[in-house]
Image (cartoon, rainbow, N blue to C red; front, top):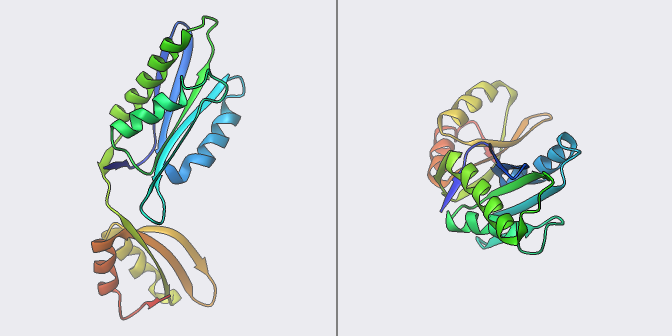
Length: 190
């Protein structure tokens, strides 16, 4: 399985209809969809598809045709994600209608092609399960913790400042264990 780092865009034009695919990590799906609807108020359709692993490591999949004929857009887009074995990703395709109807076969081809274009453009990496950990530190240790987080390729999900600093961090099991071993004397696990 693969996932992606960053977000990517590809555009395809078919008979004056414009298809703009946005491939993003699943956590950015809802905000990306909202932003695209604001950025493209004259677009006709916002077709979506996503795949992610839930807390039980089960693949959750969904697609939406958003007004296109049933099965001509969301499902073909999802099938590309499945075929590439992508996980924890979402694709949003913005469509501007060009005046010429493409037919069901034309729509399936166009949506599949634009998702393939954006997947080929994307920076794909091997999927490795990540764990989440909450740690608490004193203010004086922020610089050291931030340095070690970066060094071990850990992601900061959330940082709260109160009487102490509480981090919610996420990373591959080995990286997280290595990080926690290095900073064990100055952090409190929650």
